[in-house]
Structures are given as structure tokens and as C-alpha cells.
Image (cartoon, rainbow over all chains, first blue to last red; front, side, top):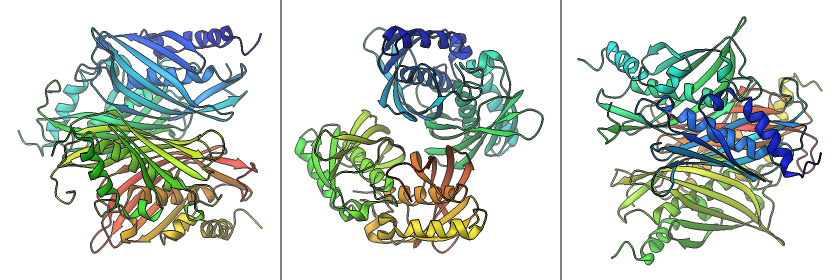
Length: 149
Length: 149
Length: 149
Length: 149
């Protein structure tokens, strides 16, 4: 099995995604996996809202963090795992739409620290609307206790 | 009805909380409301985890953002509403525990912009363990379209 | 005087820049002004370092914040002014180089809140090296006391 | 030489501080060093301002990052060094005052990653005024190339 085989990280990402309680619960789906880039899509549901009826910031953060982390999976060795150290989210427009797209991309690869940027879009009729951005810092771990894949 | 009556913001917070789809879905409860401080508690559930079986960063962000926003509710006028502009979360320790406590406190009040800080703790036997922190920037809105309470 | 005249914001930016004590002190220069984008360049100097001899994070933050704020100047009305509410900086590679380039771009325009993203590069022989990124939240103010231009 | 000797990290911090080009240039001084806490003071100077005549965000970031990093020096082994990965600054009130105080404190110690929080205050007649806060993520390095102390 060759790490440079795109099928490799695709399978590891899908296997890991299937174990994500939260993203399963919100019906998120991985819609695109490329080298250094992952996209997640999510249909609107009233359970995903905050008090104003728009997509909850926590859902946006969860989906962006997931997209960023899986984008990082495409650049690490198969036996390494990842842990998000911190992230910042800017909420730019109210999260209204029929579907939402969350894109995570690697800004800075690294053997210890990876920096990824994410963008969240609301999809309806018409052009996609940017609703939020994330910058996240992700630590690469090799065989640490409790975090094995 | 007097804004300085502590019962006032308590009731508005509880009413708003009851309309929060996400925090209802994760069984979060408001456990403390004081002037400039709100605490939320959450029992552990496997649905709230990420791929390593620990509390998902998105859940932590959702709960901390909620605690910070409601802390801000205790210092605004009854007819104003709030919108989180951005937040940063540092994930410090794996979110393992039987219950979790999320405290939001006002660091800087303001008529337009409020800055709040949050801390998340895992509760089990023994002392509470700090698992995450948040700094959030919240905008005060007066009668804006689409955000009425 | 027409706000859409590119010469307008260029002159206001240069006039404001000339009053910036800090960026003058570090010999920064504005090298590019476009609609929604401003670049600042800075030659290396030992006074700009931290204890490891690389560009100090504070210098990077100052230059990125300045580039982002001036990018915002290109989209506001001439009598408005700007105040950075908060920013986050990721330091990705040591700031070593002969010159440094700081680019600020508008990610989300707004009448009250503008979100800008910045990137810092080290320039030497060879390709530019990404050394840092910033996301900043900027408030638009109209005739506020103490902040008039 | 014993690491637990408070004199140890005090001397290493002062020695490192003396090599900081930027903080020397702005006349900052270390005014307090305790276990997990460092304070830096800075007199106002027109060279430290932005276009509105108040303390430049980059100066605030530099001083807070320095205070946070030196707070981290008090908890690491003598042969380790530190590198700030990222920080977020909230600017809460205009930086006006005769002097400024920057306090950095350790929020989460760690062998690889340290999280620190900083607060900046303006000092004049009357009570200190909170002007800014920082949360920073600092990496502990052991004998890495290019970062030796």
C-alpha cells in the first residue's frame, strides 16, 4: 500500500469519518477529497440552528474543523494521526440556505504543525454565499496513547 | 419590567435557550446565570464525539459560544439581540469525562461590541479539568431585520 | 471628489500611512494599492527581530494589520474610519529574508464589519516564502469621537 | 544549577530579553517575573502609535507575545526554547495612557504545547484600563536547528 496512492488517504478519511459521532448526527457528507483539500456538505435542518433560526456557529465550527482536519489527512503518513490545537472562526453572513458546503485546505504543511484554512458557503438558488471562515492549527501525532487511528 | 431585575435576563435567556436547536439536541442545560456569567452543563454521549472518541471540537465551540452569548445577554437592554462575529477556541486536553461544564464570562462590555471569554471543563471524580478556552467577539444589534428575539 | 475614483482612496491611504508612527519607524512602505488589496514591503533590519534573530511576531502583526486595514480603506466611504477589533496571526515559518511582503485582502466587505485576510512572505533569492497569515475583524466608524481621519 | 531555582529562569529571561531587537527599540522593560507569570511595562511614545495617535496594535501584539512567551520560559527546562505558533489579539479600548502594562500568564502548561493568556492595560491617573487581550499557542522545542538559545 503506497501512501502516494490517492486511494489510500481517501479510504482512511472515509473510515475515520464513519466514526465521527457528531458529523454523522448532523447528516454531513464528504463530497470531495483531493490532495490538500476536502469538502463536506450538509443539508439544512432545524435541529442545526441557534435562537435566530440560522445555522449554529458550533455546527459551522464542527464542519469546518472536520474539513480542515481531513485535508490534513491527505498530507500525513498513514500511521500518523491529527489533533486540532486551536481554531478561529469568523461568522460573516447568517447561515441560511438549503445546503451548506465546507471546504478545508492546507495553507502550510509541516511534520509537526499543519495550518489549514476553511470556508463555509450557503447554497440555494443563485451563487454560493460565503458565510464563515476558519483558520486552524493541527498537530501531527505519531503513535500517541489514546489517539491511535 | 425592570432591566436591572435579575429575573428579567434569566427569563429571556431561558426562553432563547429553549429555541436553540443545537444545544437542545445535545442535551445541554443552563446551570448558572449571574450578571456577566453563564454556565452550561452537558452529559457525555457517544454522539458528541469525534474520531478518537473524545468530545468533538464543534460541540465544545457550540457550548462555549452559547455560554458566552448568554453571558452577554445579562448586560444588554431587553430589546437588543446579539450576534457572534468571531471566536477562537484553544483545545487543551482531550474532552473525556462524565459531564462537561462551559463557563462564559464578559471580559469587556460595550454598547456595540462585547468581548467574552469561555472555559470548558471535564467533570469526573476528582478536580475539574480544563479542556478548552474561547475568546469571542459579539455584536449588539438593535432591532435588525431577521434577528428579532 | 468621487469615491469610486481610485486616486481617492490611494491618497487617503498614503496620507494616513504617513501618520503611522510605528510603520514609519520600521521603514515599511506601501508598494501596491488596488480595490480590496494593499501590499506593504519592509526591508530586514536587526532591530526588527526577536531573541532568535528572526522577524518579531509583533512586527509581522503590525505590518499585516496595516495592510488589512488599508485594504479596508479602499471599500469604505471617504468620511468613515476604521478600527481593528481583533486579529489572529499564524506564524508558519521563521521570518528570515532580505525583504518582507505583507498583503492584505478583503474577504467580506460590510457596512459595519469588514473581515480581511493577510499573508506575509519572506523575499530573498528564489521563490517567496509564506511566513505568516492573519485574519482580522475591522469595524467601520462614522464620525466617532477621537477617531476622525 | 537547578531549574527549580527561581533565579534560573529570571536570568535566562533577562538575557533573552536583552537580545530582543524590537522590545528594546520600544523601551519596554520586564517589571515582574513569577512562576507562570511575566509583566512588561512600556512608556508611551509617539513612535508607537497608529494613524489615530493611539498605541499601535502591532506594539500591543509584540509586548503581549513577549510577556506570554517569557511566562512560558518559567515552566520549561533550561535547554528548551520556545516558538509562538499563533496568537489572537482582541483590541478592546483605545491605547491611550502614560504607561502600559502587559501581563502574560500560563493557562495550560505542556511538554509540547503551552497556551498562555495576556492582558494589556493603560496606566494613567486612576484605575488601570484593560485595552487588549491575547491568547497564544507556544511550541516547546528541544535543541532545534536555528533556534538555539
